[in-house]
Amino acid sequence: MNKMLIIAVMVTLLALSAESFRMPRQAVEEEAGTLTKITDTLKSYYDGSVNTASGYIENIRGMKLEEKVKNIYDDTTLVVGTYFGIMQDQLYHILYPQQ
Image (cartoon, rainbow, N blue to C red; front, top):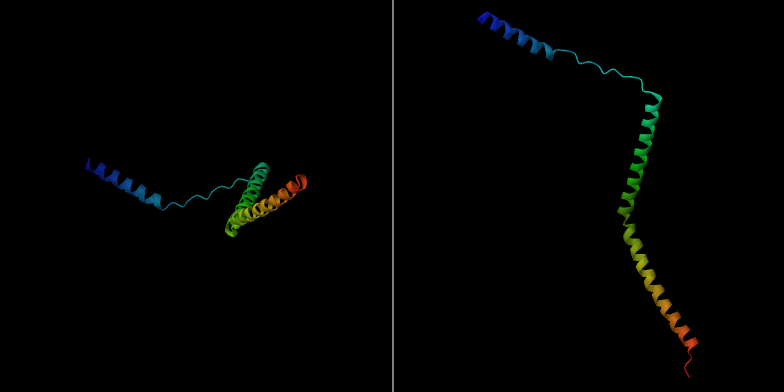
């Protein structure tokens, strides 16, 4: 019985140590079909365009164009409001002249 136990332990250790010396299998590459190639190409184009657009958005945010456009809009509305007020006053005096 002890001999059987010792032999079983020895075979188990041999099997475990032999497993670590096995050569890893090389992956078998299957030839990609036409549909797979087209799909991969479209995915790469899509990923490239998304990355390019994201880069442009980051550049725009880096330049603080949103803040500049908001400032230009505020200045323009202030000036247009002033000139509209002047034009409204002139039109009033044309329509209702004071004597």
